[in-house]
Length: 80
Image (cartoon, rainbow, N blue to C red; front, side, top):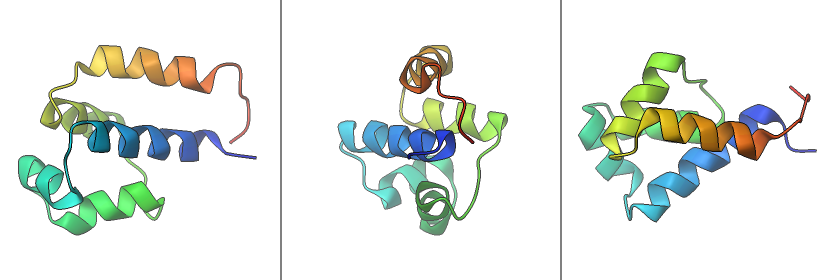
């Protein structure tokens, strides 16, 4: 079973790749080390709401739209 957090990670990886960004490209836009992107994408680190917004904006994605799409992807899943 895929957890909700894993779905979030998969969602962000798919968004990054759909933009044609490498982890390094996104990290540069975020002004963070590449390891920041790697760690949250691998699940080693969780992202908070403010980071969610920051990541979306770095990829030129409206955070509101991204959040709604994420909720749709999660559906009625109640797993952790």
